[in-house]
Length: 476
Image (cartoon, rainbow, N blue to C red):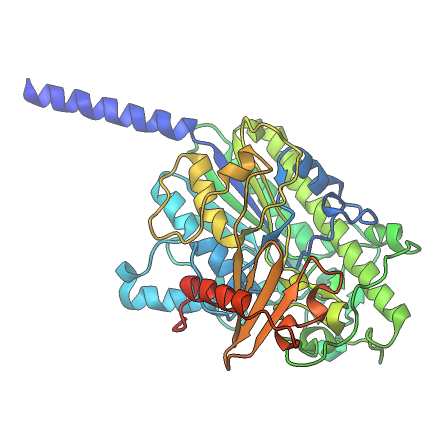
């Protein structure tokens, strides 16, 4: 009798677990590379981004979302682990090596955590730093996963671009980057979406959605990584047409900053073929660059639309949490920088949009400061998955339920400097102790270093330095 009761209890447990799994929402995470808030729903009215705008209208756009690092690998490390990490693009591979040496000492990644809790986890495109999530000379070595134990499937169809490394910096019709000096910094070729890399990877994402929403499948955690608007700025000509004659607003504070900052010479951008032109001293060329960036944003938006439309077609949209996240911003001439890799506002601020089932008060943007660190605990909270104790961020549910709820300061780092962004100020501290302090209530924003002025606000500086140290110890 005791054995029969045990068997009966086991069946009840299994049935309850199955029911719980069925009730849990799916997760669709869309990661867009190098996307600053250059979107209509973020106030850029000259940009055509109807699909992302529609997502924002049905969810919540976080107008002041900041990443932990202004470079792909380090920013994605935080998204995918919920932790502060190294400042380099090799952050996730360094973590993978740690796991080889002592896997028990490394907390599970976000997809691994969801996998542990009954989710089917799939990535397509550029989700971790390497598209497809593998290392090796061409980024396709199965023996070198970037995120061990994270994905049931991690996919990157390279097509005419030969391998993930070629796909990563590909231009139209399979052109891959060999010597960057021989590859045009921007391009707009005639053809459909598939002539550029995102077209074929999103095709695969749609196939995965069809598989994941089939009968008897567990809830899914699907991450789709969209490459554009990453350099080089290549998109089908149809996406360039709206911008050929568009009037762009002036570049704010375009001058190279005076004094010590995290300014750099835009090496990633400048190494491409620029036909002998420099956007810092050639206004017409600067406008051309910005228009091609805009075309890439609209191309990326079209890919987001394809994914969201397929989700609707599967009938699972009402049971799926959707997150759109930009891995960092991108300076388009502000501070005479064309790229990321600095600790100015433009490189650290990126779009974040969240929509979840039965969400109320949709379409109203949130103005509270949030950070990438918060995505992991937020997704757990919304999905009914236990938030792990190691996750360093906080759930954004209060701001999702009330767009006027308070946010919190954001921390970021890059090589030899750290920064904190509050509602009113940004403070940057360099490794040698040099401090930059900017007041965002002032139109000068990040052009006048208050820490170098005669009226240096010592009390505020000390307070912000202490807050950085509390969250990012000096040993980090």
